[in-house]
Image (tube, rainbow, N blue to C red):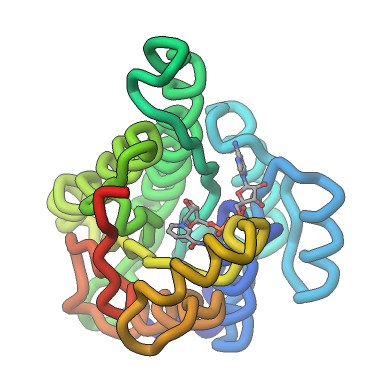
Length: 254
Ligand SMILES: NC(=O)c1ccc[n+]([C@@H]2O[C@H](COP(=O)([O-])OP(=O)(O)OC[C@H]3O[C@@H](n4cnc5c(N)ncnc54)[C@H](O)[C@@H]3O)[C@@H](O)[C@H]2O)c1
């Protein structure tokens, strides 16, 4: 798929990997709408990078519907949907004070998994109504964001790992379902990337995480995530898979 001139929707676009993805797509000629709950940061980012801003809570069907209408009005029907909105949640299943607060677990699943599903399903429905784009009969592309914690979840990451495991598992059934409509579904499982989510960590934790990334010996750059999305768009054989983008990092139990 040549992304030039195509409309893209990037969730979590006010920050980190979402912002970098939007920048990479814009550099490749796509027209991007950013969806995020952080209104001020969203508007500032959109203005800086030349994107459209749509304030949106990915967990709400109505909020996503309204954001898609804003995007359609500005850029036309969506062809590329990249889901980066997400939150981290730490805590043992059974901690010093007893079982984990269920609300924290549920909120993580709600934003990371249900939110991804909500945006993907609404974007895919819109893509299905469009003409094919090329000789492969492609109509659109969805890229979801899991994490290596989906596969190597550490102690204290139960909620986050479960949410990201769900995101990773979505790729194949969604790709199979959408195949007759020419819509691909991919997933990226990042290792440790330098974003606001990571840079708030204490220096010793930060350094120990870098030490675990085999090569290159540094955190990933958000631009490398964005580049991966553009590369997935360009290669039509990539479908129904979750790609680890992690410098050979494997997380230990703790
Ligand atoms: N940075 C990493 O090392 C890393 C590693 C693995 C996976 N990830 C995943 O990549 C994605 C992006 O992470 P990041 O590092 O860029 O984080 P980030 O905190 O910089 O960006 C996440 C964005 O999601 C937005 N968001 C949160 N809840 C939302 C909601 N309900 N509706 C709409 N937007 C919402 C936030 O406002 C924020 O702008 C996340 O899903 C994260 O779990 C990140």
